[in-house]
Image 1 (spheres, each protein chain N blue to C red):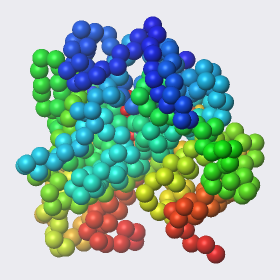
Image 2: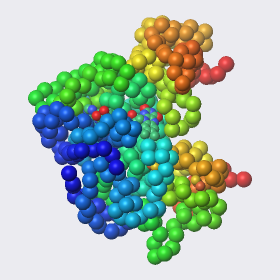
Image 3: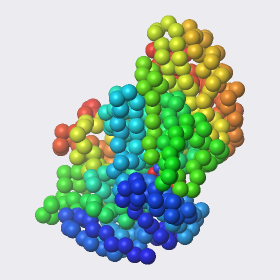
Length: 290
Length: 162
Ligand SMILES: Cc1cc2nc3c(=O)[nH]c(=O)nc-3n(C[C@H](O)[C@H](O)[C@H](O)COP(=O)(O)OP(=O)(O)OC[C@H]3O[C@@H](n4cnc5c(N)ncnc54)[C@H](O)[C@@H]3O)c2cc1C
Ligand code: FES
Ligand code: FES
């Protein structure tokens, strides 16, 4: 039995927002793979929860007239992996969420929960950083758009205030159109494991030059980050193994890795260098390993 | 605080009063007396508790009973028809993929979801699909082989066979 004192099932988005407004102590539960685990571990007790999994409006992926993508936060990882719009425009996200847990977890865990949980290890986060995703955050009375780079404020901490719900994840056409991307996860086991490092890279190139590149990292700092120093070196760079190597080395300046039982700071820095290099080489069609 | 839910379990329509803290596994095992699904880890790591919810395998230890409302739940007890095991179940029994059997009901549910999906599986796909299950007895080889066999029966296996 989970220590849940009260459970409310929101029927619609409006219903959810007004319940949140009337009950400042309530905690949102999406797929529950983080929340129920924390209750199981005794980190949350006597919980008052509001379920949002019956709200259809939060479970769609659409492409609007401008070509911008809207990902409902209640989309499960399985649904994202199999979604045609995602596979056509941002397959990097399908690749990233496919690296999460096992199938039974991916069948219930959601992208909104992954992001809102605030973990630097969230496998979807680094790709969303690369794609300059923006989150629509709503209350019963207001709505704001926040770039994902401003959403994370510390380890396990996001900017969400009581009463707020993430209702849309938006990726603009200019941020994905013409880019190719890939996600590389290093974990101690090949499945069912939290990342030691997650590395997402998207770039545009013509075979000779990389015209634009974005690098997103998980577990390289207390929150997911972008490697702006390496990106600046990579933008406009002539494609060669030496240049890619030099750019990958520059990832270290943006990192604030820590020692943990999963890996030391030095190991993490080496992983980021190696994974960035391999990801870029793969995307420009060079052999990944020397 | 109690709540009433209506759902289908193994082809039977049920309306039940639940507690908000109840997991789907507790509802299935304790209230319905269906003890096929097992509680191993209780935290989504081992898959012993897997059941199908609307055709998808979920770890019922980490899934609220409240979420079953309006849905269709299938446990290992609901697979056989007229006393006859499914092809997947037969493949496990005949292939020696069952030792103590603790992990088997969960793995069978994931394998059954694979059977129903509109795709083909390579050996690597099968291993990936079973990665949410732990078995302490078999060493997995026979489980993978049995799953392959079960999928072959429905033409969904594209593994290389020697
Ligand atoms: C066995 C296991 C393996 C795992 N493996 C991985 C892995 O490999 N990679 C990985 O990244 N994660 C992993 N996880 C962690 C977890 O599955 C993911 O973080 C998942 O995406 C959480 O989503 P959820 O829908 O279950 O969230 P929930 O647990 O329901 O919610 C998580 C948090 O987000 C908040 N929240 C959810 N939706 C909203 C919303 N729309 N608006 C505002 N707040 C919201 C909740 O209040 C809560 O604080 C694993 C978990 C388990 C149990
Ligand atoms: S008991 Fe549910 S996953 Fe282990
Ligand atoms: S047969 Fe014993 S745990 Fe798998």
